[in-house]
Length: 367
Ligand SMILES: Cc1ncc(COP(=O)(O)O)c(C=O)c1O
Image (cartoon, rainbow, N blue to C red; front, top):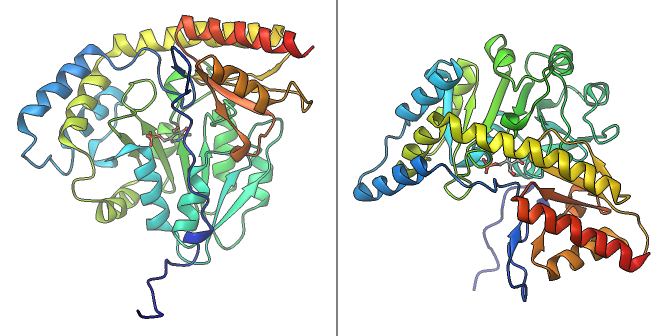
């Protein structure tokens, strides 16, 4: 056997592979998966019908440019379809952005408790991830700008952020953009935009439309309930869209995803139902969990970050084990540099009530 063997490019073996939220709780009679910010309402029935109809022509390649889906998104948001690119989840688009705009030795900035994919795609592109500390679990514009060097090529900002659930106002995002050199791409990852009820928030459309170095990524995995199908989209300047279209797989979005995506974006009532459910229950969860004496970071998204004391018998790790035994699967956030917290997706009424009751029992047991 030869002593030589294929070697991945520098950076690849520094990647800590993405750890998804748990999806099974062995031994529990009924399981509630609240670990990946999926919607408890599922997709719209119209989407399921469109998906099933797509099964009748699986032998055909999909339209590689996903034009009908881009037109439907364009109609929904008042955007030029030529400035939209669809991807197999927004993860696909984040990978493409990194591989298209970073070269070896470049730097990409993301915030301390930012989404885990950013360092992965940065290292995968041979560049260096640079961490900007947050203030009270919120991205800090001045700190981010202080990290910019001549090597910076991308700033990733999840707005709202996962797993903290916090967001920056549009004024703050504009201030961040103003402080960046024109050759730095600002990636606004707005996976949870649909849930935000703050009137000082803007997902990114306006900034993309008025600048040459901002893109906005969106997903069908959250409010549209299509996480399993893998579908996302981005809106960007013509030059960025042109570069990404050269790089992406020619059929990176399946025919079933295109059909389901069109039905999803057009079903406004379903989106509104999901939003209302979320608003009602996120307020309830924040209040009820807070009343148990646990700190909850105020969230504008569809999940809450619950902080536990670093005390034996009351820690996040022990709470997680206690909840798991009862079939309640939350997300441990140690990999997000939050070892004393758990992230919980807003679930059905039944799931939400069960978590609060179980947390009460957990805290009473250890008091
Ligand atoms: C902030 C953020 N961006 C992007 C994604 C990826 O979503 P998708 O399923 O579209 O790849 C997630 C998923 O959890 C997320 O939290």
